[in-house]
Image (cartoon, rainbow, N blue to C red; front, side, top):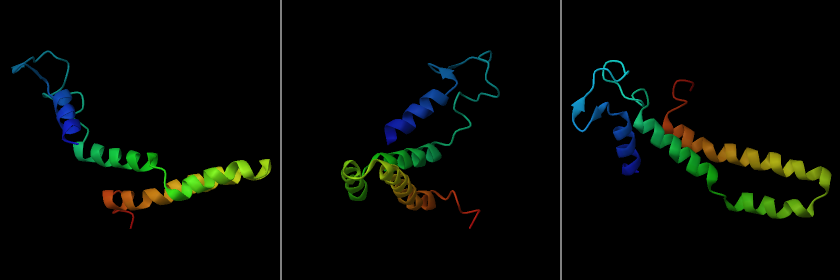
Length: 102
């Protein structure tokens, strides 16, 4: 994870080899990613990693899908989306995104 932070810091720096160029088109020495919070980006990365990890329930539903009638297969897709949302709740709570709402 430190590599991502270093990369973002390198991209947000407005200096080239220790020399500052005042005509670079950025305001007040702000870099390209100056408005982004590296901590929030790391939390978003964790969120995306959570989305991409299939769990046992998802694998089970995907295995059942070919065995169902054609009209019932979209229900599996809905259930999979619901499982993804439920799996995101702990990550969202930990991120503090909903602190102001609750």
